[in-house]
Image 1 (cartoon, rainbow, N blue to C red):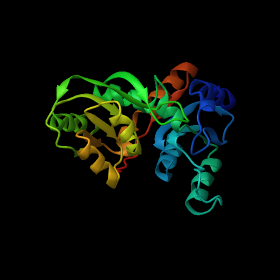
Image 2 (cartoon, rainbow, N blue to C red; image 1 turned 120 degrees about the vertical axis):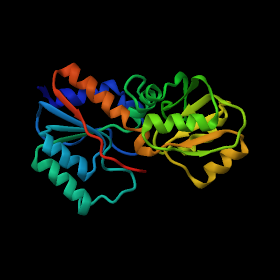
Image 3 (cartoon, one colour; image 1 turned 180 degrees about the vertical axis):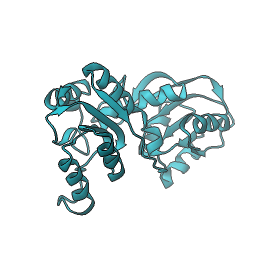
Image 4 (cartoon, rainbow, N blue to C red; image 1 turned 90 degrees about the vertical axis):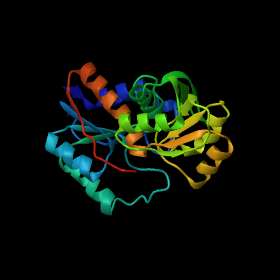
Length: 252
């Protein structure tokens, strides 16, 4: 058992939330039980994940995508009301960490994706104003663009969108999980052969083609399944509580 206040303090310090200017509040978003015996982790605090947490007897839910995003409507009505009401009536606390979980050097989405794909980390990159969240590095051995696409599909269980006709094999690449297609130009400046993220925009295709690199959109959800799981496993071991990662499939 751990006190909610101790868990929140530990996670806030571990993930260094004060270093980030984010699109949502990081940390405790909905307060439930003051003591936690069982933690459920997942990517997004959807209704489906909440129901799974209720079924699992969770006292707290730890996710990457929580609530209260900048620009969203403030009234707690409709979907937002149903989600929050379900959490409160079951005394389930919601803890959410967005950019801090992307960036963490041990439990973060990007370093965990590197482990899944077998990538060697050489450094980090990103736009000014926040700690760098993207990573760059290399493959154990060079692969053709098509072979790398096949490896990504095998490891993530989802075929990526692959753009690029560059004939040279992929040796150096950069990656940033989720909706980070906007960082492609930062990645190109690193001199990489390929850039991997979760999503694609119309202009991303042209940037990849005209700069002679491979681009892979491997899925927002598919690239971000690993940080919350790793963090949850660490928290469970550290505090001696039960933990379960529940993956609610999302093709996006």
